[in-house]
Each structure stands twice: as structure tokens, then as C-alpha cells.
Image (cartoon, rainbow, N blue to C red; front, side):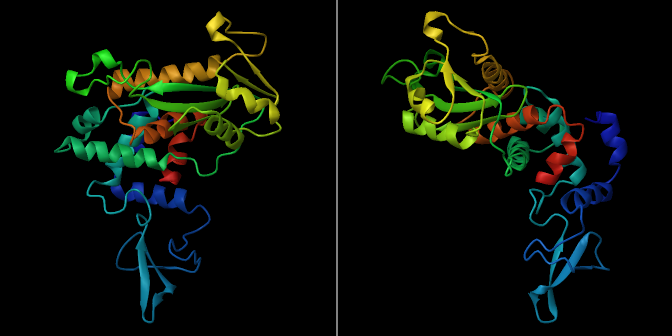
Length: 293
């Protein structure tokens, strides 16, 4: 991962950022984002703009720029600013708050920085996810503050425990990738369905805790569990320490950096933390993130 000084030297101007985006978006040559046509023509009047005669009207070719179809389309901020914000997000292990981004870029309002961060998080989603292999740990958690710490008008009086919190389930391959998902319920059908989608049937072992909703995993995988209620946390290769560490990092980020995350936007924060974890050893993590934008 490049340093901030290297980032500034690599992208001294907006044109350099556009060239980098073009190279990452179309490594084999520019294609029309509307129809996929490879025979497009450079616009002589506008740099980084092309024309496609295949999907345009007669004598009115479809014109598109390098920003069309990306999260940067119609932005009022230069690409260099977007690149700086992305660099901050990728280099902050527990995330960076929109308030800090607002101060950094000199945005007039908090909503602008908030919008930019969420757009970048959306670009970090992995559309080419591969099922996990090897030894995979699966665990569930609840995201949300304690009821007693909420304002009196927002306290939930319907019950105890996870009432008012958001359920999240995740799976992680030992020394590999992680995938997490917001769910509406932690029932057997939901949790079994998540594991079957996230984990390959050729997996060596699926390790979980004693949650009763994992009871049917043995029908599809080699499954073993540890009983945390009996103070059993490790039994040979069976444990959930890696996914527990991911939950800890996620919650420390929410508590210490973001302070409050709604259920509506939680999937975007999960995408950010997943992307950083899954590409933690990738020297070109910045370029990969730009390609996904």
C-alpha cells in the first residue's frame, strides 16, 4: 500500500487520476459502458471522452466519459479528492469517520463527506465472491448499543438481551477471506442458508459455537462446535477465534470511530471492513478498490 506522500506524487492533478481510473477500469482497452462495444472513438474536443456509434442514434453517437457508470459520475469534487478519501479509508484499520473526512477535504457540510464515504464503500463490494474453503469458522453477533445507554425516549422496553439490535452472521476461512451479512433472523433456515451460500461443500471443517440454529449443518458439511456456555473455547482445531477477532475489530470501529451505525447502512460498513481484511496483504489494494468503483 502506497504512503500518503507517494499518493500525492502519483496523482498531482485531476488528469492523472482520470488516466489511472481509465487504466484500472479498462485494462484491455476502452469499451462502451452501455453496449460493450470495443470499437469506440476518442473525442477530439474533450479528453477522456469517447463515442460509440453502435448504440447511438444515426449521426448522433453515444458519448461517454471515463466517469460514466462509476461512483464518481456527476461529482462536483475532483478525482484527486476522492482518491485521498479512499486512501484514508483503506489505511484506517478501524475506519475513518465522515466528520474527519469533512475536515480533511474542507467540505461545506457533513452530509457531503458522509455521501462520499458511502459511495466508496459501495464500490468495495465484491461481485466475484468465491466460496470459502479449508477450515471455516462461522459465528453470529449483534450490532447496537446497550439499551441503558440510549436516550430515555429511544429505550426499548419490550424485552432484554439483543432487543433493538441488528443481527449479523459471518464466516471466515483460516488465514483467508471473510464474508458477513446482515440478517433479519438467526433461525435455522436463515443461518443454514447463509453457510451453504458462503462455504464450499468441499470444506475441510465448519467450526461454530453451540447456537442451536447450526444443528443441520452436519447434513451438508463436516461440522463441529465448541460450547461457550461451558467455558469451552478451543478443542483441537475447533474454535471461532478468528471470526471473533473480526467482530471485535468491527465493533471497535463502530464504537470508537463511527459511534452510531443504522441498520440501513450497516451492509456498507460490513463491505468496507471485509474489503480491508480480504485484501490486507494485497500491495495493490488501492488499485483494486478504484477498479471496483
